[in-house]
Image (cartoon, rainbow, N blue to C red; front, side, top):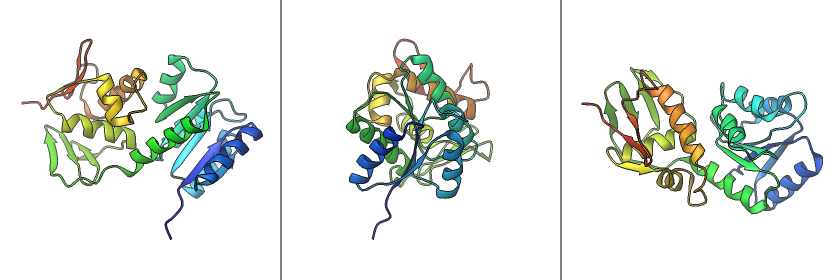
Length: 230
């Protein structure tokens, strides 16, 4: 019997917790509930869920702080829920380690779609490919392992999928739309801030000087290109 996918949902509103749990359980997911960020962290450490859904406005510890603390050790996908839909709020959440951001009110189908995307990142594609090496960067595309100057680089599933996509299209200019469609999925198209934030995160992890990158180059008004240094 296949193991059920486990999802941790943290929200301080009981009705929303119950609503989300009922709909996820009806689709076959196993659901655990937390009422604030501290409880979410405690449950995540003990249960190791496949996906974590965090509301922003919670007592004791909000969702953004909980996300930041989880990212100190956890790489499972994290989806943020918030009534605030401003780009600066989304960027802040993504900067702290979130993989996705859903604005309230949301439909069940939208949340389910975002969870499916998160699970795709978590599973990752099965790739039989040689190790990619460029300068001090080494990426094992079959084992999803990244090394920089011989040291392991900790990437979230989404960060890795983005890097792998850039590498697989080395030398090509990739638009924001192409990156969103191929890394996040066809449901995405307007979330250009996702691309900017995750490109910045990758640069901080694999570039000597993130402000003057050698590998991930910005193509003005177009998108990004992965360059293999000479």
